[in-house]
Amino acid sequence: MAVILKVRGTRDLLPPETDLWNRVEATTRALFARYGFGEIRTPIFEDTELFARGIGEETDIVSKEMYTFTPADDVGRSAGRGDARNLASRNEKAQSLTLRPENTAGVVRAYIEHKLNDIGTLQKLYYIGPQFRRERPQRGRYRQFWQIGAEVLGPAWSGAESPLRDAELLEMLATLLDDLGVRGWRLDLNSIGSATDRPRYLDALRAALAPVKHQLSADNQRRADTNPLRVLDSKDPEDQALIEGLPKIADFLDEASLDHFDQVKTALTACGVPFHENPRLVRGLDYYTRTTFEFTVPDGSGLGTQNALLGGGRYDGLSEMLGGPKAPGIGFAIGEDRLILTLEAQAEQEGHGTERKLDAFLAPMGIPQNSAALLLARDLRAAGLSIEIGEGAFRLKRSFETADKLAHRMVIVGEDEVATGIFTVKHFARGEQEKVPRADLVNALRR
Ligand code: HAM
Image (cartoon, rainbow, N blue to C red):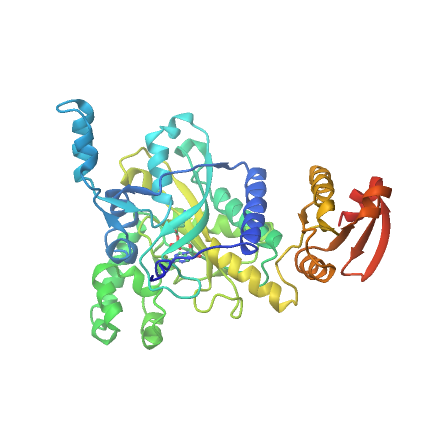
């Protein structure tokens, strides 16, 4: 029978790789807690309208990458006729739903829906979860991928608009990447101005593009019409000279935006976070205002051309675009798949893996010792050690080979050992063997 394979652009994550995913997530959660973030979990699918309005109809994500569907109407059939539930079901029937391509719109929707603005203090929310985009799959780019993201938002009086929040978030990211051991990261920073600066800039950009548009690639010609800002971050080599000559947003920022950006840069410099100003960093989602940023890793870090590890920015008008109150905010999302690929590639370059071995492998020397091994494993695991048990029917050679693959040490559980309570421990890295009384075993097996 034909084998059924996973869908193009999706991945199965298996151990031991998932151990690294879990370690990264545990480090990240602990760090987020130190910065006062709490976890939010929003649905994986939302009303399509949320993304169309939040991210923008003309963006690549909304115009061509979303997984959109209309649920079958069997929900309606199970509800009683004429009652409110039936009505609700019928509404649901007509509703277009989309697998979330990102999580900022969902978080802001939940913020509005749960009236978090009324709390009055800054809300610091983080999430870890899968997102879905129908992109052309390649290394570091998948159709289901994971993001670790965070959003900081609140009413104006909570200080959510302050450049201090931008700097704090960027400092947190720099600390996180350092804590995780990512080497050579680079922070690119820009300000794309407020809702009042942007139209003036867009007019200038359109005017500058009009006479030269026909010289651009087909993709950029389309962008010049639908979303001219996106022309700026095009990587098309043929178009670079022309793009360099286009007006820069920095020249169109009003005083308030310039001052905001200056304060972000001053605070970052004060806490020693290095950054590069990049006037072409506009990002691919329409909700951004003022600060935008991206962290990349150097070539050869396992990502191929997909070198953006994470991106984010400020979105002071998003809540209002979604029908909510004024609630300025800023956030980011890390591509977790890309982060893991980077950590693996960099570990390999340094000549060590990311795999962790178990503390010990218990090798019963015969079937009668199987239960003694199980009891010993239970006690050692209760003491916090990671343990695997072999099988008494194995020959010694097989036990050795399996133990060497899985664990730092092997403990021989033979008839004598069980009778005397003195165990033989083989340390693979040191190539040594020692006799250890049961009472000292936990210490001997600790790393
Ligand atoms: P984004 O730049 O679209 O921003 O995505 C953030 C990160 O997700 C990217 O830098 C990349 O690492 C990862 N990513 C995006 N698409 C893929 C893919 N197809 N495969 C693998 N990784 C991918 C956002 O999503 C915004 N919501 C970030 C944000 C939060 N802005 C404010 N708050």
